[in-house]
Image (tube, rainbow, N blue to C red; front, side):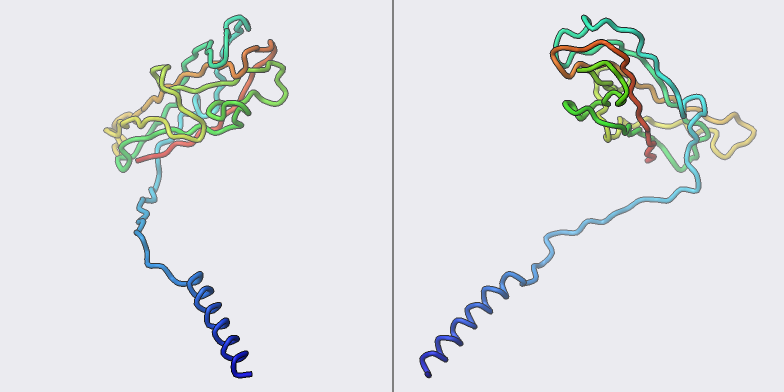
Length: 187
């Protein structure tokens, strides 16, 4: 009996040691401080660019000779007005339905008949991609007239390029429209 009791106590203690180590508290490995500022107001997006249609034109499917080929480079802009002195720069994040093959570009809207192509977005240089859900490069803002009603409101233009981009070796002809929302982030 004594032997059974000793054996049971030893097993119970071993289980407690193993279980206790699984729940032991660990010291913090580091600290993250979150900083920011809530602004009274930010820039206003010019109404002519808040909602716009960018016409990529009619492109022959022969323009796409393979996956990754691009065509129909078209510039478009987002204009920010009345930027307060509290902000010094801004960047844009484009969101929308990502292409199933290339998640960095916009998928065509579901009612479109073209296939094997999406809409890619680029910085003003037309070379540097702006992947979906990623901030563009920052633009230094002109806030020189902020708070001065006698001076015309400042205006800042952020320019981008949209292109069709082949996601398959064979592109099927048809309508090829896509939609993106955008969000401005101020620094």
